[in-house]
Amino acid sequence: MLNIEEVWTSFHSPLHKFITGKTGDAAAADDILQDVFVKILKRLDTLQEEEKLRAWMYQITRNAIVDYYRKEKRLDELPDQLPDQLPEQFEPAENNLNQELSACLQPFLDQLPAKHREALVLTELNGYSQKEVSEMLNISYSGVKSRVQRGRQKLKDILEACCHFECDRYGNILDIVPHHSPECARDDSCSCNH
Image (cartoon, rainbow, N blue to C red; front, side):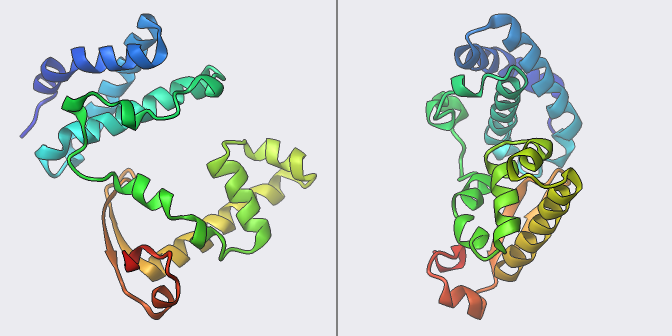
């Protein structure tokens, strides 16, 4: 069983260096690293396989760096390829399933009604707030909120018809098991066919 002191001793220095390299700000790196370890402390008991610790910690760190750039309104400065610049000791042992799924979402998004697809793409993929989208599309905030919620549910239904997803309590995908349904056989882009 892992404990947070061992994790801190082993990883705080390389993670701090990694974060500083991405932000260029040692003080910000201190804050980000603190947030990373708070998240690790809260979630350490959810990690089922210790050999995935490095990949799991890297994903938390990457997300914290992205959050930092969002808070600072510095998305234009976010490095394009954070995962590709990962130090070798943090290389994930396996593909990140969240990233793997996000890379093949387009065919599933294309199955949504246009208004739901547009709302999801603008909010979830392009990072606009629902208020910003309501102004962009000239519809009410509650209308955008409804479209996003319905779009999420429809997308979830489509994905679950294709595959079974095993997730941890935070929504991170741990495993994807294809159903090999007839719908998937007709769709060459479906992950079941790979």
